[in-house]
Amino acid sequence: MNAPLHGGCHCGRIAFDMALSKPASDYTPRACDCSFCRKHGAAWLSDAHGALRIRLRGEPTVYRQGSAQAEFIACAHCAVLVFVRHEHEGRVHAAVNVRALDGEVTFADEQSASPQKLAPDEKRERWTTLWFTDVRIVDADD
Image 1: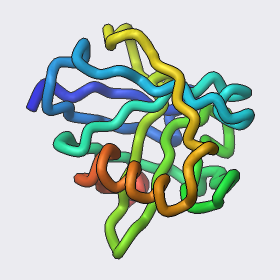
Image 2: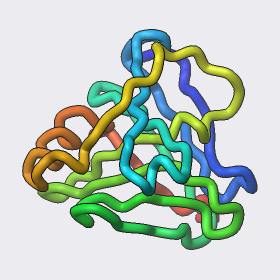
Image 3: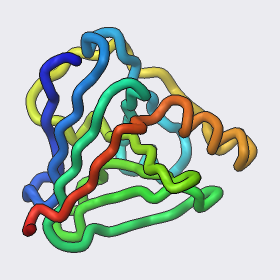
Image 4: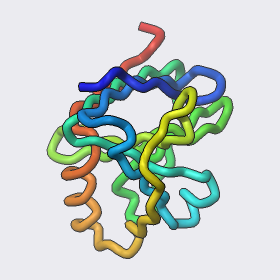
């Protein structure tokens, strides 16, 4: 694993650490072309062999759109869209918005993605294959 990358929302109520299994420059963030992600300027990154730790202070804003299978998580206070999660067979899968990373990180050039063109079962298959599977979400106030 490489050194963890850190990020979160602007006010600090949502924070994350992600450990990638390869150098950051080997990853291509996916800029979803759906209207929700475009309006938030989101570009998603995940690593099925990496690890993601998320700390929440208070209740975030949870939004489902499209097929309503995934939950988009934004800070209820500062409104930064931080991550997306999907639960399947008792396991949480997640991806982070690279726009929520702290500091400059060099990834490969973003590529456009069109998940709204996929059927619900195709989306689930993609997410469970590509997204972080080692995900831990904790209450930061504990």
